[in-house]
Image (tube, rainbow, N blue to C red):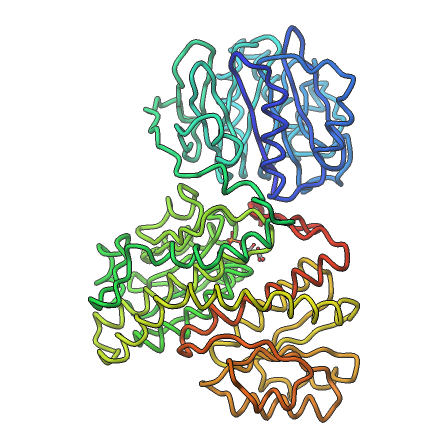
Length: 612
Ligand code: F6R
């Protein structure tokens, strides 16, 4: 979603801001803009990519050591030049960039119109900068105070940066609901929606809390106050992020790089948490809450998209190994249906970004009812971990491709560790089974490595099916969520319609779709309901569907029936999703590339969905 970057210091702001906007491109956007203050304020913005903005500003005055930039993902008003940020005040002196939604913008706008304000865009953001200007003029305050008063009148979510031509030595940031991080360099400061534009300049950052305002003045220390005017001491943290993680490192796309990173990212999710030889599984972040989890009436997993799919795998794992009842909920549905939540419930929020608005709202609701909140997130310092009682980071490293890949396998890895640890403590897993799963889990990264060698074969299969109009993905048991995930991957990056189903459900409807035009991807690995899946394959074959099957190495039964098979190494049934999803990621990737799609930034999608 929208990206924010701002700079104040001794260097020219424009190159830093533009580079920062490129780093934020992964979040998804449809227009971009910058504001720079030298003696006067210059604002440049246009529909399209950051490269279009660079083109647009080619011959313009880009000087100034105070500046900010924005990538916009349209919410109020279509993506066009006028609606792009920054927006300016009536007198053209104050300018704002904003991520989030001002819900009460309409009455505020009507009031401002009555007071003589005119608006150039359809956005809620423009209303906010006019409101700040109006307050500053009427209350005769400085800019920081006007921002503070304005934010007390606003309902909704925001991460904003405000600068003014009249106060050219000052940068103001504030947030509620949407993320914001301040970077502290030597004689320079940065503000951004996440740390990616900051990491090459400084490792010292402060994550703003909700309703905090950062007031940054040249030559002074960072000041933070709340919108209720309470001073706060900035808590400076050191970034763990490395610059290489934000580069493509020789791969054509971030998505491919991230698929190939999985042996390492899965290992990183287990590092220091698993010792098969000694029979130890330990999720340090959960230790204070483990007893509460063991005594829970049930777990409720809330998540969206790919994270919801890993939640489904989590349900199988936790019920199977720890015998704790689990419900998996779409966060967006859960929060609006008056769910029954008690103090004996444990709510697990799964999120790569840690910023997904629906997931955040779901845990806010559960927390207000007394439930214990456990976060499983990737982005360190993001909102969900900060709002949770306890949790485990997945440590997959930055995921830049919009389509989630390594985040999924890392989430499933952490859920596996959690289920094993709880099962051990509850005594619901026999010792020998526990040891077997631990040893096998340790081998997963090397099995992923081996499995990635099937890339060329998968690319070939992709070339044969790239023009298909529909796909069906079928799996059972642990492989059912993988079928859902495979279908989601394909539709989001290649724009081919795809559905995932439990294989046995096929005959209750989707079988009507099957003809010689319909590719059906079966996840038909050994163990579990293998024999049943084989019967489902036969049903598709009898109707001339084209079968692509993911099978366990050495399988001959399915091979004799399927049009194409992709072999994956053998593992325990519980761990299979971590392997079986990988060929599906590669299949989607190659199909999307062959169709000329923008793999890393698919149309209409955003990396962190910070609006409902
Ligand atoms: C799919 C994808 C989305 C996200 C979903 C939740 O590839 O990326 O479906 O999984 O928007 O995002 P997080 O995990 O950040 O909460």
